Image (cartoon, rainbow, N blue to C red; front, top):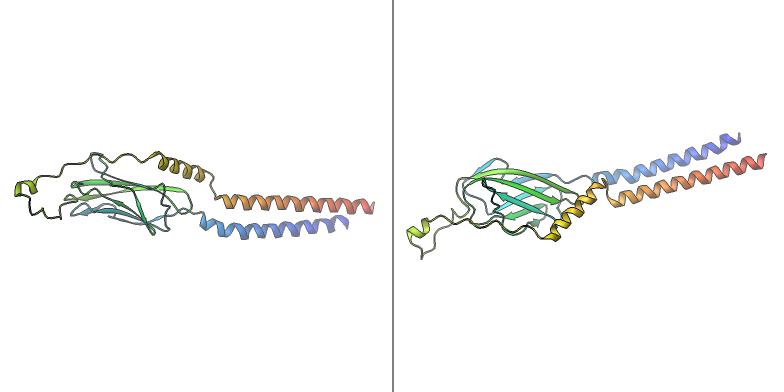
Length: 212
């Protein structure tokens, strides 16, 4: 009878703790899911009349402003991205150099999603005219000057070291596989379970000693 009475509280406490773990972990699971791409402009494989002024990548949640990078490379490997990535709500926007020529482009993007995990991807598009094709020549230009092709500009400088460190920090956090708050809560629950089990076992031994 003594053992039967002592075991029942342990079962009840373990069940209660299991319910608490489920209540805590279920809301955390959706939050820890990575953001996903909901669309790009231009779309993958799209053929345009001219190179757009900017490339847009939309996500299911707003990405972090730091650590974002979008490269816009032509067939020769020249990057025509101009300046840094701009975060506008759930969208990452990368301006395009106005001298970008006609041709096929490959866009490679990398951002840090709202759950602090880095995500990346790529898509391509084709433009039959350069970025400045729709703009009219200046009034002071002669016909020969206006018809001269734009000179390609040098590839923009590589991102500064702090941005690279941000990428590395985000990657290190991604390796943990779960947010820090999730790990802390889980550790506290495990400790609580261990303390309860120790208290129950101690109580059972005391009862057995009193009955002896």
